[in-house]
Image 1 (tube, rainbow over the protein chains, first blue to last red):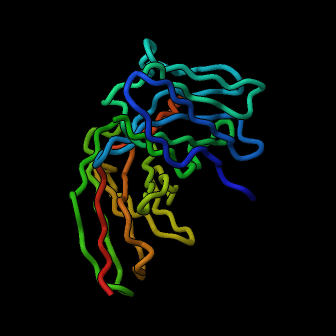
Image 2 (image 1 turned 90 degrees about the horizontal axis):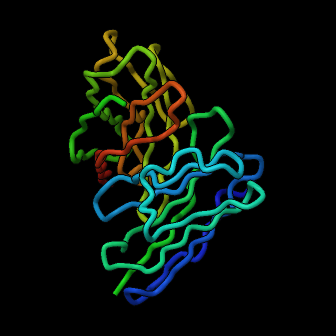
Length: 113
Length: 110
């Protein structure tokens, strides 16, 4: 069974540029999460989806970050414009409804210069 | 969610057992104890979880103190592939948000 797929794996952009990350969850997982992990820290939740609905986006910086999950499968996380402090690894995870066990993708390492 | 406290780092030798401790003195009665690990350049990976009783799976064992204020993740025979950051997380109810701390960096020596 394929795991959570993320692309790109690495991205280098200049500040003020836009960037987007894509995630394809495990088939059948209707819960999808986006996390951000700063160097030396544990991941922090940005947003959680149940199917197409964002049920917890309290930690998403809404002035520059946006996310969507059309059709309740793939998801895209966007930053516009990027700032130097956005350099981090962006992780996507998925789980079955009602399960505490989350499956993580390999992440996208973003560097903003 | 209850705050967890873990040592910053631990070392072990290959093929020896490893006991990774976690303190969670403010855990509530409905909080589960979860362990995840993160290998270098990978996303976190679920290891095990439990509520009150000790739990075993193919990866590890989880020993939970009787008062539930602490727990220990046990790797029975450490391998080099077990070198990772191990996170202990307490959460439960309808809140599926995982709150990661800094975890314990486990180094396995050959």
